[in-house]
Length: 398
Image (tube, rainbow, N blue to C red; front, top):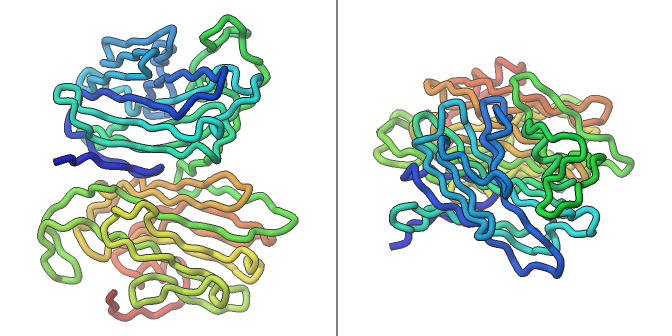
């Protein structure tokens, strides 16, 4: 029986072993395209602690950290039991050699696959197949291995960068001398390459960012929730009933307030799925009961009516299952056309509460200001009171 877990960008799964092979395979190469895989051993700040923590074709091994790269096979071997506690994450990357100067990018490659296999048995553990057709970048962070409590997890990423391996390495804190090439050939890359992140992560509670003001306005704002594809199962309670050996049903929802004073909620609980094209111009696309849906759950906000909104509070709650947020490993991604993705992770936990306020979207001079909250509450009413919304709540079901 094949128990391999197939992931999409943003999803993760636990590792059943500390020793794995990772094979990176690509589509058919266009003529003249050269590809290199690399890895970065990152500390809690998301940077390398030393240049030795950068694994690439000229520095393919850190035996003391349990990592080996076979460049010709695009294969890594990881023995994570050897990895020091200072290393919190291992990021895997794929880059196109001199892609900018050659006019090459990942859209020409079409697809990339990352396959994780048990080192001892060869059994496939996880697979991430990435469609690179939309990617105009020359560097990709494919995936990452990261510590979670006393175990390791694998996360599919698929994040693109412009500029190739040098700016990517510099982003992770590698000290690259002036004119020092990170290309497999002898020609040094242009030193003026500018790092262009395709994703912005709000790291700290209270941190804010505003979407750029556009002449044509925002047509649509997508708020997506994804969480652990294989949540820890245990005994617990839900609505005062015992829940035995079930996963966690995490729901995405929002409170909305308009400039003229109208208030309300959009959520699966009670069947309030909303409407994108008419009032309240917010719609919940589905109710994912398991966390196994490829797309997770998504709120669609009609940006053409953003000038009528005052604020929107994005939150999530555990409808069924144990309130164990540390195992949920949830992430919210906010997307809008021609804007960088905004990512907010539930990176602090209150396992005695079942509801979490994640982000506030505010209308500031018709711009969208996004603020990270991560505040936990025992009930909808308690959260409502904390943010001064003014709704009254009764028991509901789905």
